[in-house]
Image (cartoon, rainbow, N blue to C red; front, side):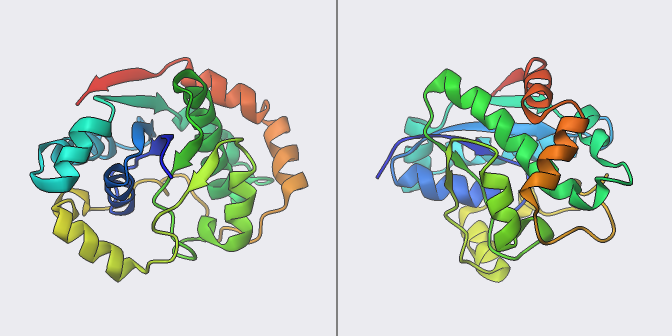
Length: 221
């Protein structure tokens, strides 16, 4: 099976490996980066650009597939202002779920522009709080795009080995910044009604996503 997907690329270890795996399978991949500047620095975006450029410059099957199937533009969407809405006492423990739901809602908007059917992520089961079975389910219902999770059943050591072979590990390594606004004790069990109620109170998930996407910019790879 092949198709067109929006890839949520963070600059971390997992997402470029996921992108590479789907490229070689013949998927058309349109990368999107959710920028948390100015809460964080520019490192995440810089790493994302460097990782995608690395895939495009590789020799062999991955590089050939990237040059054929990877969009030459990275969509960068600012999200920090909207994510800050989920740091209140009444919604902070669900912060990471709201974050992923927002990213998926943004991917939906871009997906409509490019006729995508799927959203690609580097998620793997149980690695962090937002990747428990319950929370993955709470995230994926935020978008009609079907989930592509090629790393879902791999442990971190295996993924790091894949990244090392790709040559992306050294680029990806460094402090994670996605948890800059996150809680110390995030929930591991999503509650759909509570999530939707919290998002409605913050302005509505679709409105938040549309507001973020309205400020996107393109970066040539």
